[in-house]
Length: 132
Image (tube, rainbow, N blue to C red):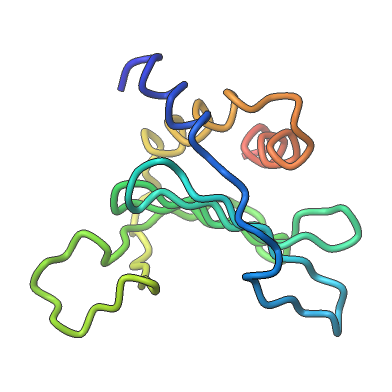
């Protein structure tokens, strides 16, 4: 993917209204959701006390997840691009974890996030990528 396409993907991420998201007020976790400018491009982040607890980055049928309780990036594939699944509901997705980390996709995701340097949540996510 060239630099222009990476820049366009990063710029296309738009925050979804908090009113549309369920919140876990019991433990103070706030869910933040960004949708990208193309189908199957989402970023969902759980934040508590200004710290990222969990995130999931999906793009074109691939995913990266991270959980503070289990440090380390985990890659996988989603069922979003499967056309043979008649029970598929497009508002939900299933992720099958990769047996081997997809370092190329991790690099692409990092490049996309770098287009948003200076924005607090993106900077915190990049810190996770940097420690990986």
